[in-house]
Length: 301
Image (cartoon, rainbow, N blue to C red; front, side):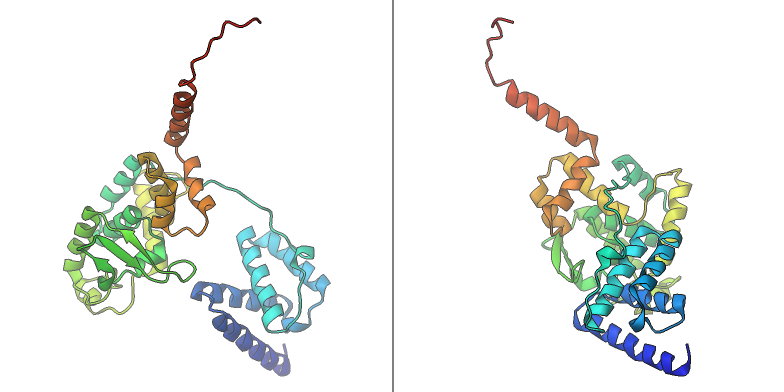
């Protein structure tokens, strides 16, 4: 781009980011949608406000070949936001790109495998993080952002602030999870953060930022490998494990939905497909119901 085009792009990019903030989008969404605008600008080396529909089709054809469908979907949504809120134009994305509807069941760990991972983790900070994330069904970011003031030891509740959808919720704090948090916090005594950044107790005590997200994810992969677990598991999988294991205990789906902060009951119902016990219980309950019928099967064939 020449200087004039670059100046125009800079102006549009700033408007794009400002509009995202005005719409109350989460920081990760803002980063993703802003990246979508930068990516298509780099692809054509021109300001994206004057691209034709054929050029957009060419771009997404190339993107489908080089990136995952999740990236394609994010870029589509990001550019649609740009067209609507910055250019004040309608963009019929269905005619350009439509990611397939995929229903993939995530891998989960058994209770025994979760125990193996926790006990096989050598560093206390990672061990505590894994246990706390699993035992309360928290997302990675929710666990990292936990603060000392979020823990209500008397009520055994944890205040999750601005979770998915920028919504607060309270989750149950198991006794052993409270003990684990206290045991780790004593090692650094940060006045605000439960999982502060830093490699030593001293630096963690003074830290104002939480542990590095990508570093945690890499360490988690190493831990899984050392435990001999080859399933496709990420820190977020601990949340799925929690939901599936609650189903196994017999807790009703409405209670699970409330604990996990699911907006839609269908999301919670997914966990019934991740455990064999749920299917076994269904069979037992159906048989128990039908067996209450007193049948006389002596009719003619």
